Image 1 (tube, rainbow, N blue to C red):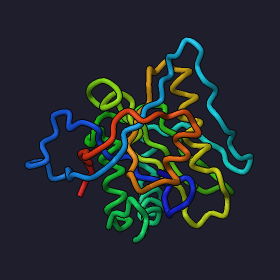
Image 2 (cartoon, rainbow, N blue to C red; image 1 turned 120 degrees about the horizontal axis):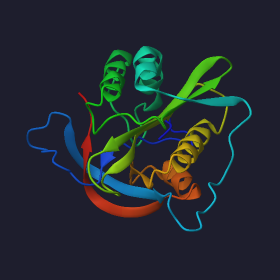
Image 3 (cartoon, rainbow, N blue to C red; image 1 turned 180 degrees about the vertical axis):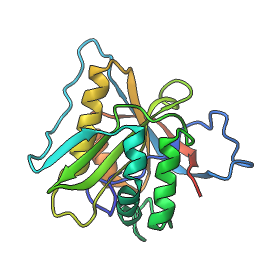
Image 4 (tube, rainbow, N blue to C red; image 1 turned 45 degrees about the vertical axis):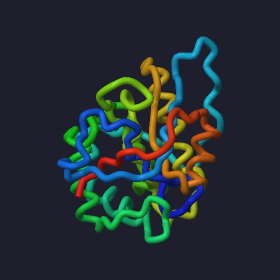
Length: 214
């Protein structure tokens, strides 16, 4: 989720089940080791969403149209959020990252962007984003799925990724979504601790399919 090796970072694009994606023919697919985690939002007595956002960060809804318009700046942040050495490093320059975000906005990767997606603003500038899509199938391999969450690695502020994910979880519960699921690399222990802290539980782990744009 929120990149650059911060305590808030890891790339949850990984997919728990192929769900019709063919790793042999799909140019966006490759295999890796990830953990699929899920957060139930329909418990009879829902557990509170732990933590709180920082007063220095404002979190706003992010529509597909806004993601397209802001893809250049978000692409720049995204390309910096997973540097060499990060568990989820990908060799994407800002232009390629922007193209991928535009594809997500068009619903071309895993599913349509959901209105519970959020963008973080700090000191008048974009500081990160959490992108939620409606992936085909049932949880944990489908349904509302965090396809990406990342933050500005150069920001001195802490808690940006946490604030984003809390906002997405809160909006999803308010809008009566049943679950939110995601995938995290085995080696991304910082992100896993954050997901644990916010109430995600392990649903599946092992060799899984990652789908991403090249």
